[in-house]
Amino acid sequence: MLEEPDAVVVDLAGAVVAEPPAALVFAAASRQAPVRPGTPLLVVAPDPALARLLPAGYERVAVVDSVEEALATPPRPRMPSLSDTLLPVSGAARHARDMATEACARWDVPHLIGPAGLIAAELVTTPCRTPRPWPTCGSPGDGATW
Image (cartoon, rainbow, N blue to C red; front, side):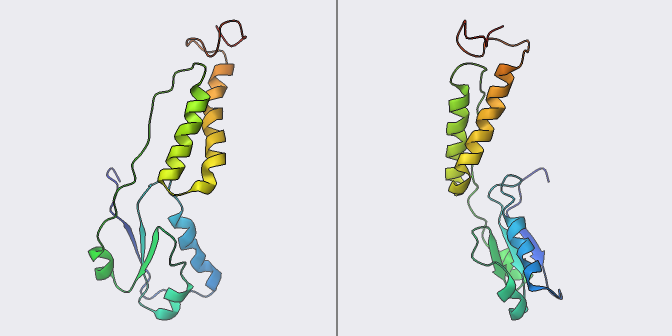
């Protein structure tokens, strides 16, 4: 998939769910925002009993009655990506945390702000602690320069 699709359509016509909790797999699949941010999951469930088992209402999941209805669903506005070039200097980790906070806010996943900020900061900080052939990673004399 070179281009981001407008939606992912899953046709469950004829599907039999023997164990109701198995339907929760669609909620898990819909939360793969890091893979395809902003791509909604449209689940076709013509059987009302099956439709009731599906996690409807989650922001990226829509349960519809037919493939035609799914294909006629207008695309949602794209969730913008966020990128920046971070230099290995003092303040880069703070900037990375700020970017992670902004991305989580844009994608409406505020519960991930803390973990995303921590991971982003670590991804920036670790190279500054590891000797590499790149410029200064901190203030002169703090042991982080080469």
